[in-house]
Amino acid sequence: IPNGALGEKLIIMRTALDILSHDTKELFTRIFSVLSDLPESEHTSILNDYVRELFEYFSEVHGSLGERKRIESLIDIINSIKIGHEKIPLPSHSRIHLRYDSRKLLFVETSRLVKYALGNIIDNALKYSPEDQPVAVSIISRDNRVAVTITDHGIGIPDTEKGHIFERSFRSATARATEGSGLGLWIAGNVVREAHGSITVNDNAGGGTIVNVDLPAFSLTESGYQLSQLA
Image (cartoon, rainbow, N blue to C red; front, side, top):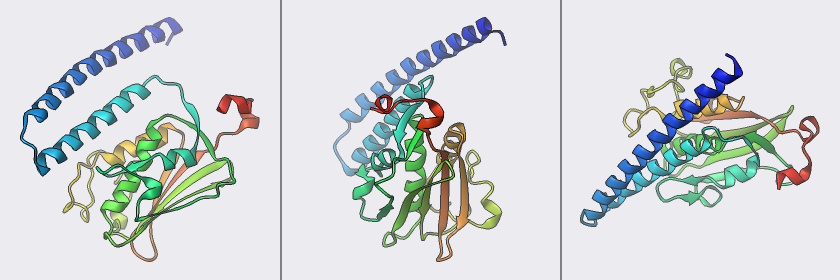
């Protein structure tokens, strides 16, 4: 496609997205208005949290479209994830066992959506595991790659379904008793692939699932960046 035509298509796409954003924000404003008129109750509070979480996610997605990728510490990304409707910081969550070498600078060049992809995978590990079982999250570097490994002791995923869990709207037979849409892992898979990463799923020998998210490590020497550009 000639540069002129490509530029025109990008302008049209951004304009359409801005219109969609404006209309969607108006819809959220109306929903918040209706919620504020409802009597206070536990159910109203939960519904309000759901809508706010959806609005925040929409805002992040819209903000990241067309955004230049950023250079960030993967450790900082992991530490900034908030879990569940209570928004508990991941490092403070009682069931999360977080492991990494703080002496290593593990940088990745990616969009803000990677944080939400990792948060969704970790949230699933907690959701589909017994409440008295921990979830281990470890970060390591190897061969110019950075890997985040999430290990749970939950219900597991049958071998026949492992190749389908990142498909849109797919829900494992073992997970259908738990509320969910089947979209979270599909979105996570797309975000990781767009970042030139990969996701693998394996059985945990002690029961449960091991999910490995592999991302390219950012290299200062190969990119020509100076340390001052990371500040």
